[in-house]
Length: 190
Image (cartoon, rainbow, N blue to C red; front, side, top):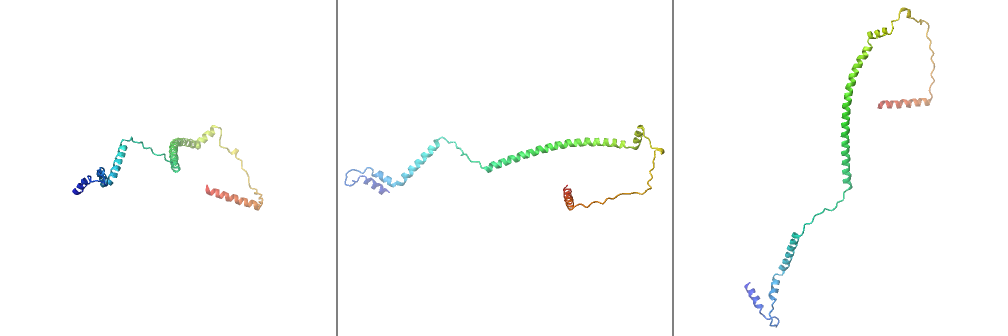
């Protein structure tokens, strides 16, 4: 290394190409040749540092999200959920109203049962034989006497007339059969 350094110093004093002028930029060129790749890396490094400094000093930007499209399936899903929620709330309202009606009807049934007991007792009292006799006597009614009884003599023979029924036509029998079939089906489903 020392030899190269000496050589560089002495070369600087040599005459170049038959000229007596010194080669003044020779040492700079030699340094550039030795550090040829370093200069480019140094420049790139300084540019990168300058960009980082520019980023640091730049005002921060507000990030705005792009407008996104709303899919039809999402809209339908949300709509379905809302409709089902409304239907659920409506069913709860109906359930509450039915419960209130049930309480009212139970109260009314209790009142009607009490009234039924009172009316049944009154009804039984109306058909008590002693009560009926008293009411009939008060109205002027008495039991019939012997003079009021009449007997009917039925010793003669009985007579009755039987008429022969006509046989229905074929159409009447078909209609009767269809009527009976429809009636049977309706009776089955009731």
